Image 1: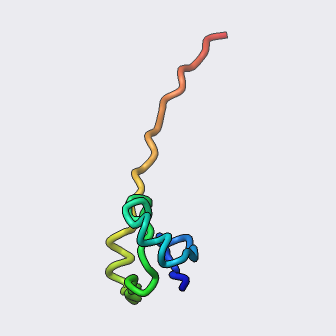
Image 2: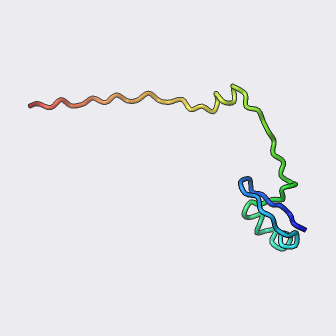
Image 3: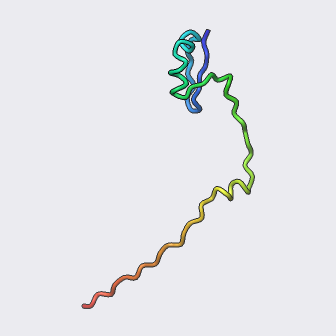
Amino acid sequence: MNIKLTNGKKTITRTKEQYEANINHFIKRGFTPLDNVKKEIKKATLKDVVDKVVQLKPKKKTRKKKWKN
């Protein structure tokens, strides 16, 4: 029997025996069974987006030295 594992980006399929034999190895690499992972879909509000926006600093004005010719 095959089991699907995911780490968020990648999904792999391994046999149940192989997963149980190497469970610590898979956990260390971030893989968990696909059935245990539940993605929560959250709608972004305008306030959440505004809070994450980084305010830009104004550019510093530099004076250029005048050359005497």
